[in-house]
Amino acid sequence: MIKRYLNLVMSEDWLKSALVLSLLAIGCVGLFYGARMAYKFGLGMSHEHAVTLVLVALLAALMFPAADLLRSKNWNGAAKTCNIVGAVCLATELVTHMGYTFGQRHDNVTKAMHQTVAYKEQASQLDERKRDLALWERRLADLTSQNGWSATVTADALRARLPALNLAIEQETARGGCKQRCLARTQERDEVAARIAVLEERTELQKKIEATKRVLERQRDRVATTDLGNSAVVEQSAAFAKLYHMSLTPDADSIEWTKYLLGVLIALVTVMIAPAALKAAFLIAGMAGFGSYAMSAASQSTSHVARETPPKREHMRLGDAAALMASMKAAT
Image 1 (cartoon, rainbow, N blue to C red):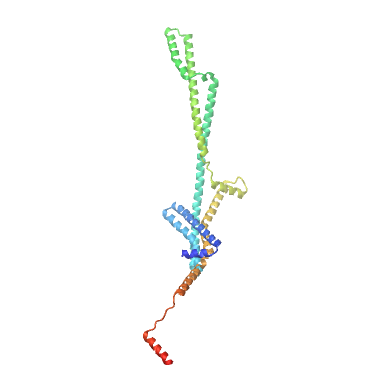
Image 2: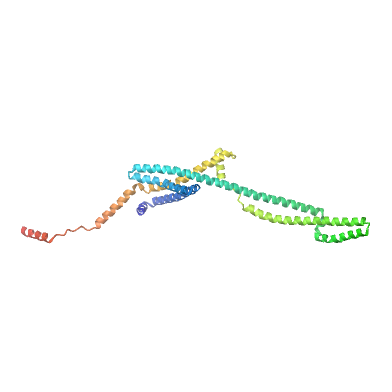
């Protein structure tokens, strides 16, 4: 049957053949992915639903070409039944595609929203690090400007002076009458301790600034590589809502209704690809005349065999031949 159909196709001109083969390819690809969408949607309920919906998709694509073939044989009742079954299956597949399409579009919007939250979180952390860096750099600048000596001395050097200052205070106290001299030593010690504290804070700020700069560099890289979370579904719905209302600021309800209407349109188109392409391919290929072509081919084959078969010779018995010879002699 396949060989005869290919012979039928190739017997037509090349443009018709190319058109038929293209439509068949489109129909088969559309049927495969339509059935796949039905399977994925049904799998959300159960494996049984998934398999059954795949069978419905197959019937929806094949019932209408089958009806045309049956009608060409004058089996109108069977053709009508096929059309009814095909219409029911097509409506069922449309509902399936709508469910799958709505689910995928909602999933796209949800993922985009989550991605947008992730991007904003990364950007917020980057801003927070920038604020921390600016605060610490400002504090370091204030410490440096208020304590010009801090750039020429280290905390360790000042810390080394503390034991000697404490010893001097203890010695003055031991002599008794520690007044002005002891007070001066104490003030000198406290001043050194204060300077040590300034230098330690300065060192700590420098460490924080360097660490924050490294974190900022990594944070900038993360923000640069993080998707902003744009949703093609949202953008499409918003664009059509704007065009419909001729307004750059359509309300949320208009965008939602547009989103659902576009989902229905997409589902309707996807569900029609396989049935329309296969039906057109079979009609163009002359499926209505396939039977007459097959009978014509069979008739040609029979006549060819008849021509090649030699006529059957009749063999006479010996007695009949002798009687025939005798009658011929008597006649002469």
